[in-house]
Length: 154
Image 1: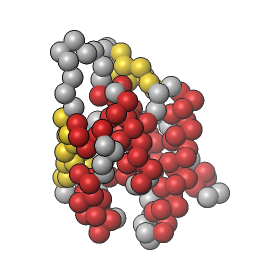
Image 2 (image 1 turned 90 degrees about the horizontal axis):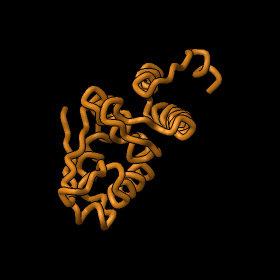
Image 3 (image 1 turned 180 degrees about the vertical axis):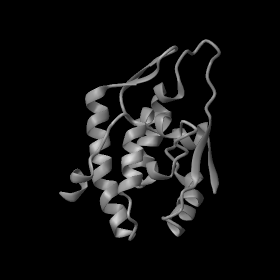
Image 4 (image 1 turned 135 degrees about the vertical axis):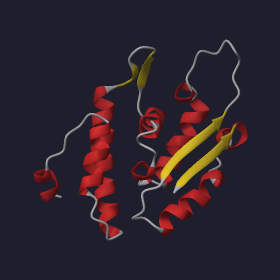
């Protein structure tokens, strides 16, 4: 099930999560599903503004609030469509290189990935969902390999 959350300047600047609530309700109604969640962001910029959306403080802050409210959200993003990478860029310091793409701060990314693994592992368990494979796939998308033995100690 594909879900797109449309965000405009007003919602972003007012930290209004209402545009995301229907999608969150749908995801929570079927937590074992694997929808392809994406964001459609309409944030006007000057033509001479070279910043990516993830470099705009108002946009990043909205995503920080969303992540705090729904820490399980990365599991439901359209990973193949680049939504996981874009979502993480909203939360992790990075640089954008035209030829190499997003280059995350390595230490920040490592801390974020491990914190997410701990939160998501617990959340999936609470939902009665076996999610080690999903967690391993998510971390692989970000360049990390988790061994099955790691999950045994959780």
